[in-house]
Length: 208
Image 1 (cartoon, rainbow, N blue to C red):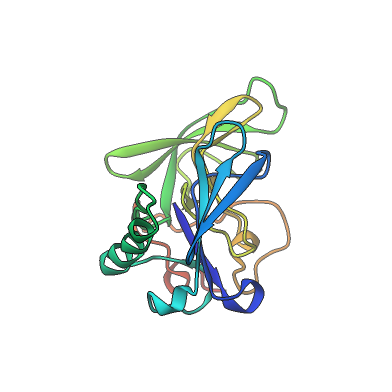
Image 2 (cartoon, rainbow, N blue to C red):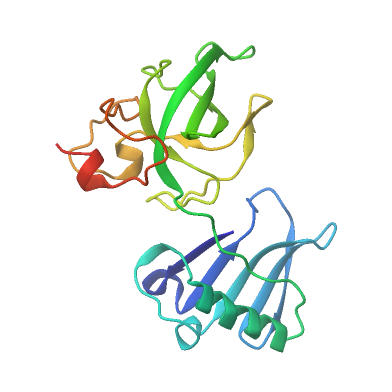
């Protein structure tokens, strides 16, 4: 689940997004402060909108937010009060972290994409399809995992690129809106001392 809040652009609404809804015809049912967005075809829940959200939890900023366990309890009480049986769950964190390319092979249906096996902690590797020209085995970079919201508002969910499963994105400096980011293609190249699995910290991982 991706939790997002932008009072200036959207109003006092906490948006809870479960999946990419762009290609799906949808309907909305609202009870009190809670609106459930669901797929027209089969009724499964795509997203929630919690209105007057600041009356339920402390909110600030204009992007992704990470509710505390206490916040989630309050939000789920609000859903239950309106007779919704589903529950909101925390987004696993961190969603931006140091990863390292362990294996890489050419995509069978593309002349520029590669299928990469990327370590995101010492015990876990995910598959990411990427077109970065500087991708290479051994490279450490910043990975956005499913459940991340990019600075431009785009959302990271598991998906497919040219028919191959991809579970995240390796990030270019400009995609993370970093200061003095080069305006060219290519993912961030971290020093070899960067620790795989460590949460992304611009002050530590980007000094330009």
